[in-house]
Image (cartoon, helix red, strand yellow):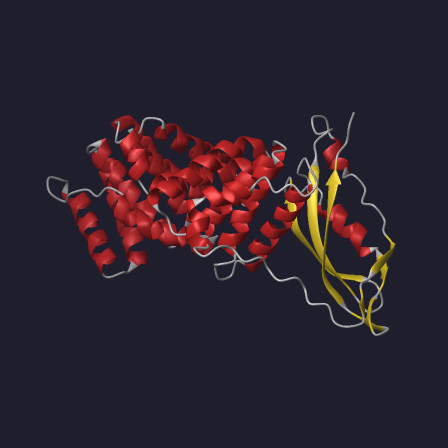
Length: 384
């Protein structure tokens, strides 16, 4: 996440407004010129200090609120570049509030609220309430943006993606479904190169489709997430997770063996860009001569988590996809949760249950061997 936010911040310095030094009180102009010089020298620590001084001096001098907002944007941008999330949230929130009062361009206003959300997200230690509030203000501002600007701005997709991600963080994947669609459509219009945000937008959209039991749609979205992640360095675990969810959604399709999402792949311009000569299916795991796979001996079902039995949660479905190894002695090891829907709800009890499972070990020519990469899924549902 830190690398992602830092990369975005590099855009923000360019995108944010800047105040002209002319006709400003001397202390504001002096601090602003120090900021410009520090940015030119790529001395971002000094730039952050100068940007804050310019913003605060403008506030004290009561200059035009639009200029104060521009100066606050500069401070928020360089703070985000430095991963100083407290400062970034402070600067961008102030810039957005001032922008609302000054009735600035709605796309610029949306971008300010969006970056306030990024600062709050990174600064929240798991509680994303402020980030969600700021992100909602960002997408609300987009409702006032001209259609032509919505179709040409590269920032729109990022704004919608983070709204989808933050809504999904509550476990409400159905509500994030439409925002993820808007993000994907905006990425497509902008001709964005496949990257981590693009892959994650498809993943969030897939989770929303799971919530609506739209299995073929979910299979397509997870398939696309897997394909993008597989092209990116350092995203192997995300690709594996997306692959597991693709398989799970496919199994849940209304008819066994249904491949009703193929037409969605065929219609996807991005899929055609990723695989211009057609997608080649991954080769099956080679099976050594004389190999006999591990077979379960004892499999204890996980218990339904007590915290999920609280009022309002009964009947809520959960899915956990897990991978593990079976040792030469038949014990489970390296238990890894590949996917958990809703997040952080059922994984712990699944991990505990699988740790107690035993198998007859896999063998080659009668000699016990380690079996790696066993993948299974578990569905939780309580009905009152």
